[in-house]
Length: 339
Image (spheres, rainbow, N blue to C red):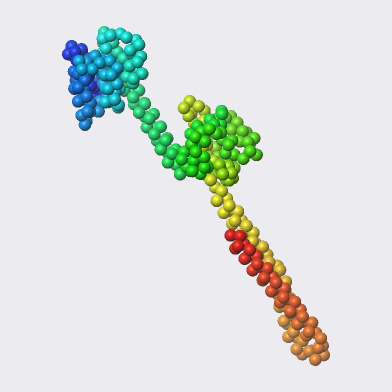
C-alpha cells in the first residue's frame, strides 16, 4: 500500500458514491487524508482554507449548485496547484475531451471505477503535476539567469541562424530592440567580410560533439561600431529546435588597453636603446678627452692649437648629448599626448 499521507478533496453530492470512493482510496493508500464537500459552495470553502494544500481533487461534475464546464473551470481556478480528476456517471466523449482541454488531469466513469484504476489515475496525475512544476521551475530559473545576466546572451536556431531569444543586456549593448533582434540572424551582427567564416563555424558546430565552444570574434553594433567579443556557446534544445545559447563578453576596451601597454613598452625600449647606445658614444668621447686635457697641461705652451681642437670636440659632444635629451623628452611628451 502507498504509505504517503496524501491529502484528497472529494467533491461529491451522492453519499453512496462518496463512501465507495472513500473505500477505494483506503484500499490503496494506507493513511489518506480525505476531505468531503457535497456541493460547490462547501468545496470553495474547503479550497479557501489557509492550510488547504490538497494533493488531488476528485470532482463529480454534477452538483446541486453548479455543474458541467463552469464547475470544472471554477474548481481548477480555485486549486491551481492540485490536479483535478473528474468523476462522472455519464459517458460523453466530446465532453471528456473538452474537460481535458480545460485543464482536468483525468476523466473517469463511475461505473468503470475500481480501487486500482482510481489509484493509478491519482498517481499518474500527481506525477505529471510534479514534473510540470519542475519544468516550470526550471524554465523560471533559466529565464532569471538569462535575463538577469550582466553580459549579453541570446539563443539562435542552428539551422536558420535566426535569433530565438535575447536578454536585456544584449538589447542595451548592441542597440537593437527585441523585435529587431528576433527578426534578424546572427549574420546581421557581423561584418559582411566575415559571413563565410561564420557559416563555416556554424557548420563545425553542427558536426562537432563538443558541448562548449569559445573564441574571440568581431561583432557590429546597430550604430556600426565594431567590437571584439569573447564568445562562449552551449548546445541546447530550445522549444524543440536545435539551438545554441551564447554568452558574449565585449573585450574591446581590454584589448585596446593591452595594445596601449604594448605601445608604451615599445617606447620604453626605444628610450632604453637611446640611453645605452646613442648617449653613451658622446659621453665616452667626453670622458676620454678629460685625461688628455690633464696631460696637455704640461705641453700647452708647445702645442697651443691642440687645446682649441679638444674644446671643439667637447662642444660637439655636449651638443649631441643635448639633442639626444631633447629627442627623448619630445618622444615622452608625444606619448603622453596620445594617452
